[in-house]
Length: 297
Image (cartoon, rainbow, N blue to C red; front, side, top):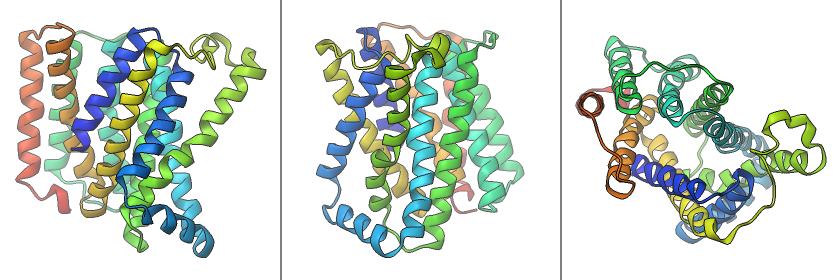
């Protein structure tokens, strides 16, 4: 479910940017929509419990806040800037490197096993994702690639830290999810402040981070993307509550397949043979994960 909602969030956001959306206004509406969606779909008690954690367990609250700021704040900002500044062909492959960084952080921080099977599946999945998203073409590095790599590190570090805190502390996964949009607000606030008052600091990013240009045509896409993002967050942390961080990030590799199908059906994009090979490698790796002990080791 996490992979499915993530795929729909990417696809709907892509439609929004095709319609001419600016990144920061799009993200403002997206985050507000995600917050409202979480308030509707999660148990209302989750918000109350979050307040109780803030009052009675402030150390845990701020540790989770830091992890969520990395994952939903910095990770989201870096990824959308990167996508804006590089070819989609590069971005599609580079975001899959979050799989490698998550497994490495899980090994270093959570002491999850780094077995030969896990390493092998990582390389097979990355190769499959490479074929699927690049059609076997080589990539030329751009500054946007560096932003996407930074996003991968932030996503991975945030998820692994949340997994660590959920293992050591008694906390409901939905309570952690409720905190995500709140933890992302300081990051967006800093970017909005820079874009409004000192845009020269951003250099050639000033047009990318143009603030407060709300065009009605893209608002439905931002709302739809925000709903899917909130649902992806819900299933992300519910998965992390019961499975390893490595398992979660490996299974999310089916996302590019779902995105590719949506692109073929609605955007009339076509698969070539090498992409079918890449998609098959990802699916076979997912089956291997399902029948292995990766989810529990």
